[in-house]
Image: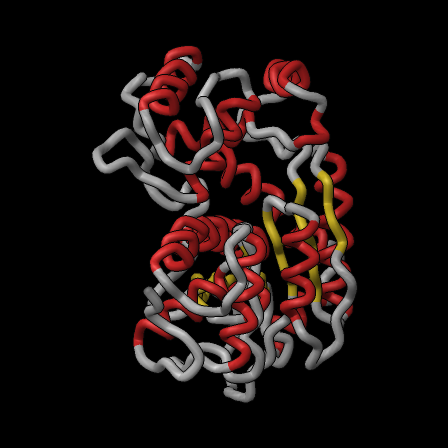
Length: 338
């Protein structure tokens, strides 16, 4: 049964295109236009290949189910035992994480059944949490602190790190750092990398971009590096007189937004505005390539408006770039501790 294919149009196609973009697949110049054209078909084929399906470039029940499953990342929603069972990539990640830290969730199937529920309750009980089997914010924070990568040395390494470091520490967090071509942003990124390394984190410096370059390539690099966070720093410019102050941007396309990116953006915005006594413009949702194509929380940080004389004066103050970097580190610590 085929639902969508070349030539299909409408809101269903918009939904498919939006999901593909959020999963990191490119749609070319047409973008999300509601028309199932060659670029959308190509993205569907790539998705099907990755999910080990027949790459026919068409959307039927199986491909749609896989696309919905892939749309969920761990932390996007509460997970618990129910009938019919919850399924998705977030469940797969939950099962893999529990198995990696020593709690038997069974086969990594992407379906939340009784074995996974038992593993969640055992994990909660061992950490002194309410063993209700619900993976909400509190359990997610605990899991985040125990999450490990294949290169971490196995279960012994996980428990060793848990003993040696406080909850929420930046130790071994992989932070992708990007910046615009202006000197202030470059200085902020360099200072941040130094501070992150001092905290035991792993800063990942992305290649410097020139105006007009394809930022989706940067997002792809961050995805390939399995970064935990992506941060981009740039100074803002406005032709309107009087526009000044800091703003942080997160992904929002009007239908979907990244809740974890918004949380991180708010924390960074609060810390930077307070540290430099900047005019606080809050956070804004933007549908930009570098925010849309990442698989991890991503934030664009714009500390100042360089075209405003008051902000321009702040930029040249000794230690201003270092203050932005230090405020960002404080926000990152709060992000994993709160």
